[in-house]
Length: 141
Image: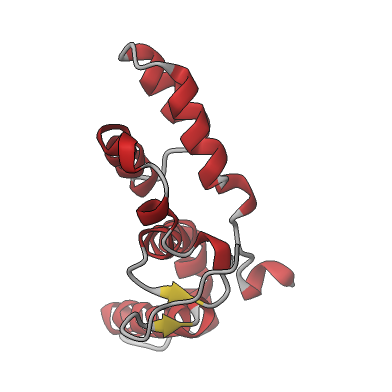
């Protein structure tokens, strides 16, 4: 399936947007110490924030809020197209993903709360978080 963003949905580049976030972080951190931290500040941003930043952008893409061009076109709006009959389950799963939890955390949560595992695993397989990771430009060095 190849989805495209409707005209009223913003299309952006994660990498371009990320550079702006890195620059803001570098400026704030440099202001705190009184001198330009340069690439060190950006590398710190990557270490501390990249994974959560990417997760947030991926979830926006899945929800159809923003079309991030580096992400799978077929994933755009996936949550609006699938799981309509599982809204009571998809919400708590998304909340856990937003907090940085991974598949195993979510499966353990479901088990601890006596939630049937079959639909949880079905949702996790459809979302396929483990194949939706992007490499930051510093990770290529």
